[in-house]
Length: 404
Image (cartoon, rainbow, N blue to C red; front, side, top):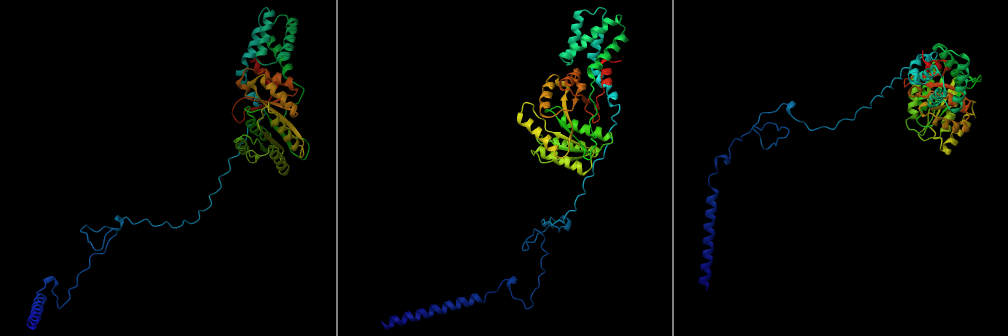
């Protein structure tokens, strides 16, 4: 047994000795040239500087780019210095409106073109050799078609019949003179036609402009400001039409053209409050006239008409209301008379402004509306130009009706 154990020990010792010889032989194996240690260390040149986008450990063979060719990452923009305040826009150049004197004479040709049928039709009928009943009926129809109105037409026909009977033989010139005289009696009134802009008080004259939607009321207010400025008056405008979004802007533009200040408020604001402020501003600035543009009231809306009465009452707390001008569209004819009646019940109408008179052959509305309200037509609109609003001149109007 001892002999067996001794043999195993000897075998283990022999195996260990053989393993040591093998490992030692391996350690003495020659290294490759690149890995053989050298007495003098070799210094290698570092690769070129890495470029933007390059990886340092992987040099590339491509040619180096210039700085102009390199796309640098976007840097955060530095905070911009506070911008200098932009200069305020220059005030619009103030216009010098055309003088009002003689405006209707200048616009006579435009008026004559629209009213030519009335004057020429009457002269043609009156020039017939025999004026029988049928002819007189045609004369009546011509006048009624021109919206002269039933009662004024009957009065005119009766006077013409009487004068033609007395005159006997009728030359064209005699007929023209006769017709001119009778039409003047029909058109003219004893009431003053000038817009009242001097009340003799220390407060400015206050003019309120009223009318239904679509009659050109705001435009008329702006044109009236031009008329007054042309006559040497200083004007303050009150934009009390707060129901139509563009009304205040439109009125302010008209005012800026002639150097008139516009007092306005927020859209949908209280019209009476704005009217009050406009008069207050006019007093403070010692203005000659304050023009107040009111909202276009539908004459069927009682609430809106009541509000118009409120505007009138509020204004009169500061200064007398010198004029209430009702703007009517001449092209509406007899419907304009319905509007006139309702407005006259709410405010004391002192004058009529007839717009678009050049766009209708129904110039007889001048006669009809004056008869209906008992107040004169003071201004007429004969075009879309800024100076196409003219003081009404009965003689120039009649001359345009019957032509040369």
